[in-house]
Length: 140
Image (cartoon, rainbow, N blue to C red; front, top):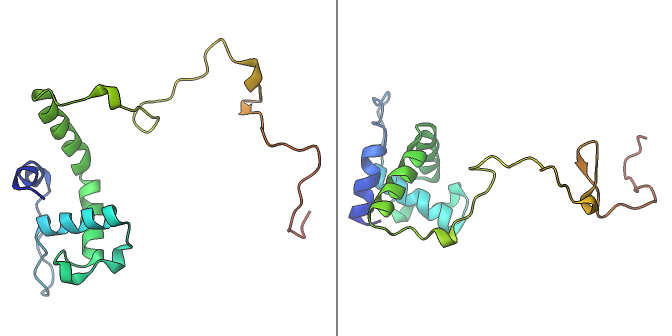
């Protein structure tokens, strides 16, 4: 991770709480973030994060990710990066995608397509069969 990117992320991270028990020293946030990014990029399971990489354990990285998520770090980082890109005119809106996870989906308008008829608000099945479905269950 570049020093420039880290300088944007570091101020957004919450201060760690006091250490309640003696033990291993706390893994620095930058190393934990690199471990998080490694797991997300490679798709390996958290417990298989190699200790030799110096990111701390997979569980440490997972806990740090959860804590930062709860603190709203990712939403803040998103806003900071958008602001930075806007200021340098580096946003390419031709490649933007909006989905219902960020923008509420519009309800069906007044001119509904009759080919997509619905019954009681549910979409018609495109795979329906006139014969009953087979069931492995013995209960009927």
